[in-house]
Every structure is written in C-alpha cells, then in structure tokens.
Image 1 (cartoon, rainbow, N blue to C red):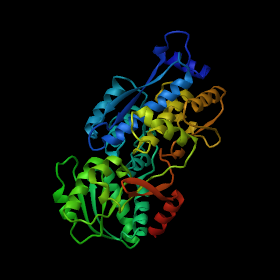
Image 2: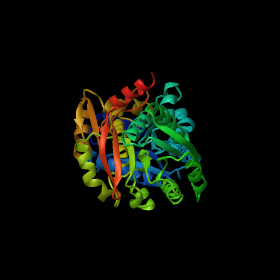
Image 3: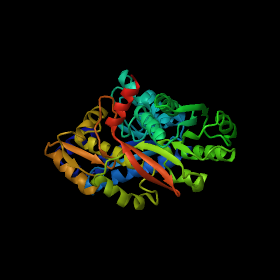
Image 4: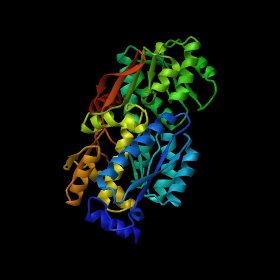
Length: 420
C-alpha cells in the first residue's frame, strides 16, 4: 500500500503532498561514505553535499509533502565495513538507492556484493577506477551503477601529459595498493613512458601505517626528479613528509584526491610550491554559482572546493529527480529514470530549491528535463560513466590554483595516438 500510495502521489503532483500521514510516504536513500579513515575528508564533504541536495529538493516539494531522507553510514574507508553497512541498508532498511562510496575500494565491493545482486541503484560521486567500467561491460552490474566522475582510464593519460608539460620527466611513483591506485598508475605509466618520461621506481603502500619511511626510501632509487604520489590526504601527507625529510626533491605530481587543504596544511605549504595535479573537471553553470555561494554555510565550514563536494551534490540531485521521475521507490524504475533526468532534449534544470521546483512542475506535465549540475552538464553512457574535461592545477603559497584544462576529446585523442 505504501508503494502504491507513493507512486500515485508522485505521478499526480509535483509536491508529493498527501492528505494525511505524510511521513508514511517518505523515501529513505542509503548513503555509505568514508566519514573516517584515510578518505574521511572526502566522505564528510560528500555526505553534507547529499544532505544539501535533499534539503533543497524537499523544500521545493512542499513542507507538508513526502520527503527524501538519508540513512548515512560510515564505511571507515574500508570495503568490508562498507559491505556490512550497505547490506543492512538494503536488507533491513529496504533502501532503493545507495549513494557511495567515495573511493573505488569501497564502491566496488558494495557493487559486487550488495547492490548489483539486489538490483538496487548505486551512484558514486567520486570512484574513478576503470574496473567499474569493466564490470559494467562484462554484464556484472545489472546496469545499476552510475558515477559523477570520469574514469581513471582517461585521467592517467591527462596526468602523464601534464607532467611532461611541466618538465617532470623522471619520476618515482608511490601509490596506494588498492584498485584505484593500481589502475591509475597503470594508465599513467603507459602514457608517461610513451611521451618520453622515465619512471625510476614504483612503490605500492598499504594504508594507515604510522610511518612510510621505508617506502619513501625505496622510491628514491634511481635519482628521480620528483614524486608521483597517488594517495589520500592523511596517508599522502605522511608519505610526502617522509619523502622530503629523507632528501627527496620537493617536486610532486598528485592525483585528484590530493587537492585538499588538509594535505597542504599537514605537509607544509613551503614544500609544495612545485606540486601539480589533475582532477575530473567541471564546466561552470548556474548550479556551480549556487553551490559555491551556499555550501560552506550549510556544511558548517567545509569549503565548496573540497574533494568530492561538488559532484556529491550532483549525485544527490540526480537521485532525487530520478525518484520523482520514476514516481516510485522501485529501484528498477529509478534506474530507468536516471538517464531521463539528464536528457539531451530536456529543459535545463539547475541546483537549488527554485530549480527543483521547476523540475517537479515539468515532470508533472510529462515534459523532459536536463539537470545541469555543479560540475556541469552530465550525461551517462551505457556503463553509467560520464565524460568531461580534466582540470590542471598547481599548489601555490598554500592554495590550489587552476592553471588549465584538457578536454575529454583531447585526452581520448591522445590516448588513441599513444596506443598506435
């Protein structure tokens, strides 16, 4: 009865209003984020972004109507913990959607062990491993997985080109020993060497060690000119300090997640004036302006450029709009609706209460919509992937500054050229 009542309500009105017992029609979405552990900074920002998106959506849908709520769980940056939390959300709470995880080593086990077998939708804001594309291509995701970040299959190539352009032609590599780190380094190494670069050593590390002096020492073999560090802010800072204190050159290439004030403060800004990095980029929209204006106050002081913050809002917004479009809490209908709320021929919708109110009115009228998010226009391919530009950045005087951009087309073309 609950599902039938909800479905009829969502299809009939844009406000989800019910004559009575509105709480009975609330839809709970599971959120599994890395609130603690090495990726805690990402997950804290991401969880607040999803909350903000749902707040905006609920305000647009009417104060007395059905609400979207979150049940947020901490993965502790561990795949096993994430699977346990996701299992509880799916089997006990019966959530139709899980937003998360942030890092690939959390998202992948959730997908393979929980959401894909159960047919529950999963949207990751920041998991960039190419393994996720491969799982979809091999028919192992049941089509339930989507992400609002580009794959590392492209980012590794973009990082290699950026490194060469900055004169970083002889690099040691230290990388987190998980699916994300291994895949990123594989893609980077293939492109970097074909572009004329030299990799002096590749050193994997295991997370949450009190010291990384041995890894830093091993990476210095071969007299590298700098270090390509593929990590997360907490462990990454420990590794960078060990590298510097051991006499390693203070020249760094960094992955997207190291675009973090926490990392800069922990290492010391004076050591990072020759630190460069790449991130999945954005194209500015009205949603971007709205988010950057309101997020810090809503989040309690988290900066809007915190890693994963922008694309987590978009993940929440897309899920909210898809639930409204589906007119149901049926996961299969929500899955089908996700591409429809970013439709090529839809009317543009932007973030915030007013934008969502417009979207709900259009949905009520049976008209297509195209959500253009904080990170820009989003389209999903058959594997749940998006394509977009890559932001090129540099740390200067303790602040991350964007210095350029590589378009997705340019990266794809370069990757194809290097594969010849």
